Length: 376
Length: 95
Image (cartoon, rainbow over all chains, first blue to last red):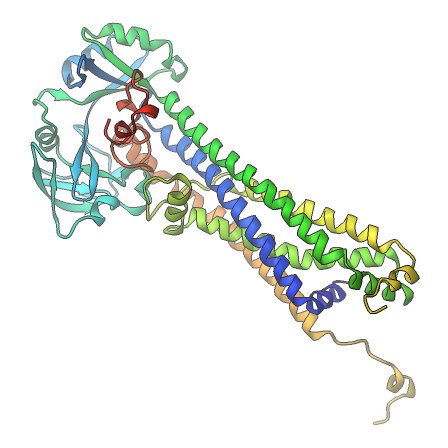
């Protein structure tokens, strides 16, 4: 029966190709958006799990103010439940290709993180892929007021792009000079908690522990913001895909199955001894031969477009309208489930439509069906 | 060698070489795509997920770098709750 179905596909090569292209493009469009939103959600959850639970920023009437690093650590340590308060040295400064994030760390990074990379010394910097692309030589000039010129000694690996794309990592002294901070000052304070569930409750204690007004941002707010964004992207994709799916079903019903020439051919087969079940089976097999590879091709293309750089960066730019990350690497866990769901979302209605239309058309007597021949 | 009359008169069904070939192409393409995707899922997942997270933790960064430096999505700690960015488009790029 499969051979017969393949012959049917060959007999209507043009229609089969049209159906193949229609199905593959529909699956590609829906799967790209849904896989991307799922991958963004998984990636953000994975990355934000590494972020500090709370960030304490000192403020006054004019906005942000640097904090005295040692005093801030002492104040935060006195609050029960607070672990490892870390003064952060960072800021956004103008770079050669737009704003960049300058970071410096007082702590020494373990070799497992550095992975053979040399930390910068005075006058040196390690930059992300986005900053490196804007450089013509190894000299990097940053800032406008307290401008600083550093030598780029290394570039962060491409697969760390989601964390390091716009980073310029330099020594604390260089960062303080560039950001206009005194030697004992830091940008803000990152706080980890003994119990993450306490992050809402501990804010009041933490704010009261400092002698100046502070504003505390919470990790879960960031998680929620990112999750909402990812869910919204997925929702838009589904809403956009429903009319496309309905249009596809109409195309199949209208052009492929329910036409007089087809019914006359089926009538001929029935008069030769085929049963209605045989004809339905033939059409189902034919639809599987065209539909299954189309769905698989659409899914595989979407998978490549979401998870393989540089196509992944283009897809992210297209869907989020944000920064184009050439080497974007998203987390793949959970992608298989989404792909199975999309295959079912498109494949089952497609096969259902073929089955119902075919049963309705093929259940007549052979004579009635032969009369439907357009040459009669 | 003589052939039996039954064999001589027996009609073979149409060979359908093109259809068989089409069927083989379809099946092998599907199997190849499934295997490639499954292999990518199984082999590449553990290798690529760790490095960005390790740098995120080491630098104590608050958000991933999918958006431009200085934007609220990149640096959520810079957003003041009293300023609604929906009505001040310039502030979105320069907090």
